[in-house]
Length: 414
Ligand SMILES: [Fe+2]
Ligand SMILES: [Fe+2]
Ligand SMILES: [Fe+2]
Image (cartoon, rainbow, N blue to C red; front, side):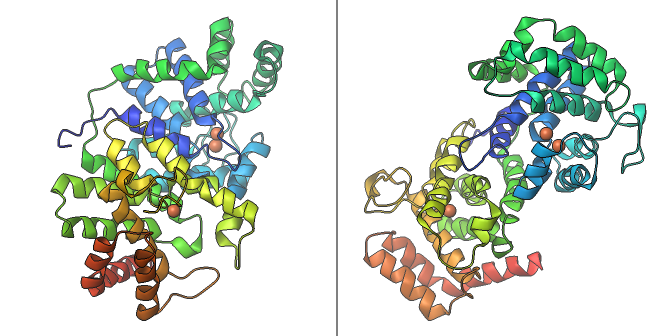
């Protein structure tokens, strides 16, 4: 695992799937918006560097809304307006990415991706003052939103174009409307958009862009951004993913994992709850007991963590370490119900780290627990054949160091 080297598009397109998670399945808003952007870029002959930046921006453009279901609903229901709602998630996306070494150059275009050509924007920008990439994402985003999934694409292409043309010079850059009118003459444009099997080929075609490759440290930095998004879903989990990452890395070191394996463990810890983006905030924040329907929804999260992470090159191990954290040694866990011998040691470590961190955090239905209580719960789980005894022993032997790691992180969060 030492030659970690992946193309940015490989990681970004997979993580953009996390922005599509919903209670019942997934949508493909970001992928489709990226495809429309790519077609516009080709039509206007955008240079290769900006073309690449455009596609990455499109793949993450609504990242600022991912933690909040009410924000996401606003985007779907209210895409036509330019009120505070649209401004909020664009600004939050900017704030999330602006200091990132890897994704920082997507921050500005994301910030203005709902700005209207004619002005009247929070930013004060209008016309060509709005970055070109933002203008392209804006029009591509609207085209995507206007597609109805249960209607034949050629029965709606006219309607979509009429809406776009009507907004030329008002909402959208007129030269981009011209480009859209031209490129949408091709039947293949519409057919590609609604053909899920085409996307693999599309993303492969983007491999040609740029020579930058992500290292393991780059992947950790990007995982940290997603950890922030996941942890923001509930005030009770402000540092949960980071804590699990640190504790899991700590336990992995005790078990003698190599330096690169410990880095992989950090990524697994940061992203172990990635699939939680499929759970409405109200369920995560609910005080008291969850009903059966809510439990089913919550339990989907590790499935999605796995299916998203397994798509990333060199992430086979990370996907397992991250997503098997609710599997138990006796095969009664979820969602794969695998048994002890099929669960890698790294996954067993994340499971113990997750339980330890959860028990020492506050929860909507209880305050954090005393040391004796935490230890007795964990000990019982090991005795009952749910979690690995040797990892629990490691944790108990270094209990106060582990607690200190947790406290340090809480201090940073405050
Ligand atoms: Fe948006
Ligand atoms: Fe969008
Ligand atoms: Fe979990």
